Amino acid sequence: MTQDSPDAPSSDRRAALCEAVLRTLGEGAVKLDSPPGELACEVPAARLLDAAAALRDEPALKFEMCMDVCGVDYLEYGRAEWKTSDATSSGFSRGVSDDLLPAGASEPPGRRFAVVYNLLSVSLNQRLRLRVYCPDNAQPIVDSVTGIWASADWFEREAFDLFGIMFRGHPDLRRLLTDYGFIGHPFRKDFPLSGNVEVRYDPEKGRVVYEPVSIEPRVLVPKVIRHDNRYDPQLTNASPNG
Image 1: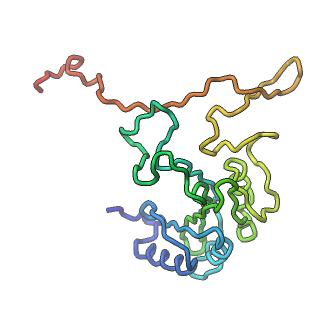
Image 2: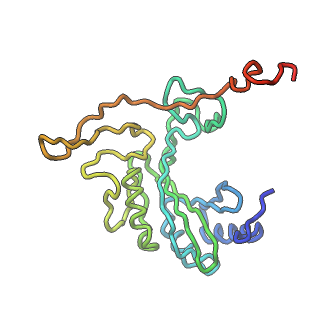
Image 3: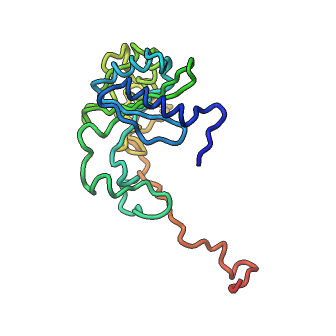
């Protein structure tokens, strides 16, 4: 049984908050599985702005602050962590689930990219995680919530830069973290781990130059330890018979 920390809302309060959130969000809203002491919900992309405004303005909720906005790429989620032929499909701490999607199947339309909003009510001391999926896998786009929470401005720019998720109505949607002229979105699951180009300073040209990546791409696959030689009886003072 998980015991609430002194500053965490009680189970009864979380249940009441969940009921109030779902009632406020209305049709299409669902509660998501989340760790103990947390609350997460999902709404359709078409209802994002109405849902966000309601969460901010409802007296019982008052989520005045958007603490963070992040993108998620669910490419091959639940099937494999690494696209390598030598990655084991069994072992310790694997994230693979056989009942999500069959091998070789593509992500259902509108279920690859998602945007997650972490909301805080300062006045009521309560939090909510809100998720919305981008309807189009090829061109992920959702409405910008900067008109509701001004703090979402740079968060949305970060999600655009790293995941390629576009935010309709954003006042200044441009890259935030990557370099000028960067091609691609480095947090997408299909972006190469070693990147596409490498940067170095050329003393002859007197400037920074971009060149095709020269290192050999490789994936580090965790190994499952079947037997630990450190505890072999022949290497310790313990006798084989105990």
